[in-house]
Length: 312
Image 1: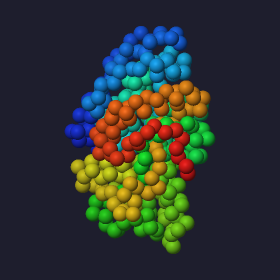
Image 2: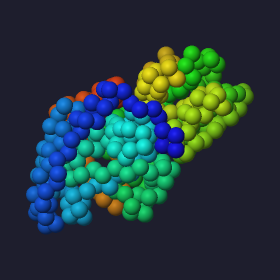
Image 3: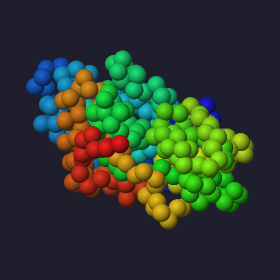
Image 4: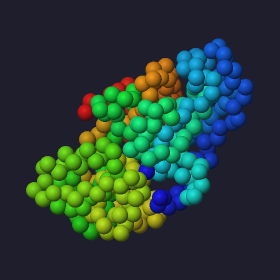
């Protein structure tokens, strides 16, 4: 999700610097243990643990004080490296994870994992949740329970100046188009293929950054990715001079706008419940919108923390 995107500008660094987590202290393995003493500052909001939510967590997570999170990095603006070649992470999903951890009194520990390997790794017990701009779908609900925090669709990224004058999904017919493997965007392109008089040459890549490299080199005419990711990449890559996001008036929020969620292992229903309640608290106090606004996508924040809301 390796070629990495360019270093991010000052505002992003400021957001990353705001995500400070104090050292966890003495978390007893007892089921009645108090939350780990931590305070988290995210997007200008200070978040403290709620004892009732901490107590509702599965015993194993209370014991370790950690929720193991798989995330496909980089996939701007949701998950990114603060600095190329360094492990420190930032991004909308990362910040939301820190905020949820603060509310639950545990640490959300993110580990980069290729997108198509995330669900198998959760099924194998390697991770507890996925936070990676993942679309909540009926198919994925068979193996994960989703707590949905945003609604957005897919977008089209093209080279600066839009040399092939692509204005909609229909304009991709007969062209080579990049997409990340195992994503909802691949499903969208495959469905569009059936409507095309001339076939789309769909080029799949393991990482979003690999797809953008193909677009940079002219090997493809466009990339299909989430609308927020398309907008962020167009704004920040090479200072805004490399790409642009196609603005289709018929799909302002993106194509096939759907819920995106935190996917939780079905083995951990108590964790799903606790995350949903913690997310609702972050919605109610305005923290979720502030996190989304820090990455220019305030409009994708949901007004209510729903569960398994994806209908397709």
